[in-house]
Image (cartoon, helix red, strand yellow):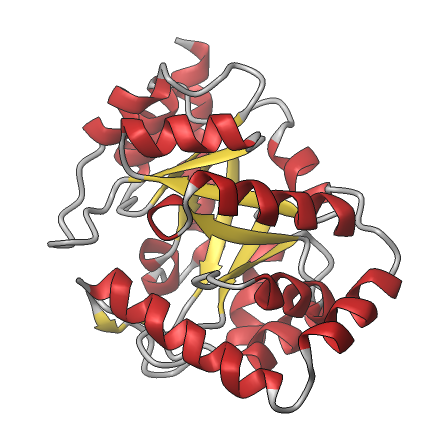
Length: 265
């Protein structure tokens, strides 16, 4: 299963990083930075649907999405188009991302950013803080409830939002028990990469009203946005559809219009 491979490679990357900067050193550096104000979470709580727009060159399911990859220009285009937050892949092997790409984009835009990677060690949360991230991704399929609680506590101390990703009822229960305040439902089956929006619809009722509900993966057009808005998504994470759009501003405007129309119905 690809998720297992991603997790194993993430653990290897952490081992390599620790040879240059020890866990104690990175923790000290991160904790000495000003505490974040959870602005990623606050942004997603605004009225109407929020859009997390993703910068990624490739993915395991689609291969290379963007042969040309002027990532800072893409991020600036998202910001200019009215994106609420930006997601940046830092996983290097399957997504062809990097920490340097994240840092350069952080310098280029001012809106909240999430470091999207496969978190298997607290070290990566401290890395994200040092990169200037406002949020990190925690995947329930990789983290038992007790581990999730531990990682959420680290995020709380640093002032980072955790987007806690789920795929089924058991993972939602784990996220809720751990105290997650921003819960994502991945509509992509990581075993066969198929997309099924009924997953978000089915799981929506299990997510507490006070939590932010983020629909992740598979959004390809305004109709999809409208469908996710209809089931009560507070935010959607959009990657490939916007990466492939020649005019990101027009495409995002279409998405917003679809969400607004649904909210008015």
